[in-house]
Length: 148
Image (tube, helix red, strand yellow):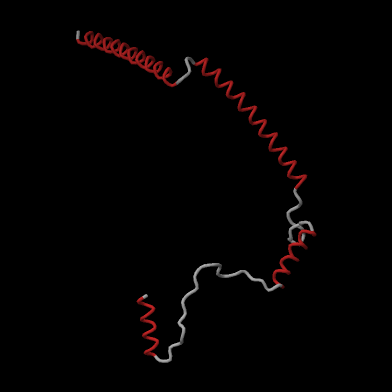
């Protein structure tokens, strides 16, 4: 009789486990449905989300192609207009006339003796009207400067 009771108890546990599993599975499916609806955001359904994605993908492709065309056009324009950056000796390949004009202007400025003023405007520092002849006079002068 004990084996019979154990068998019935075992079957009851299995049925209870199956019921619990079904209940947990149903709850998980319901939660997943709620989560999916929440995750769609402003889209009403998955099909609306898919349509929006396809539209976005098409727009992205168009913009990528346009960007590629502009980059190729810009590169072709740069290749046509830009002089080579350096010559064999490492000096920039600028127009020789421009080089000469810049060098001549520099040489004229240097030759004329004009220099850049070191102080423009401002106040000059005060210098004593006489030079002190003794240490006592120098001390008095220094004291006068420190007080002012």
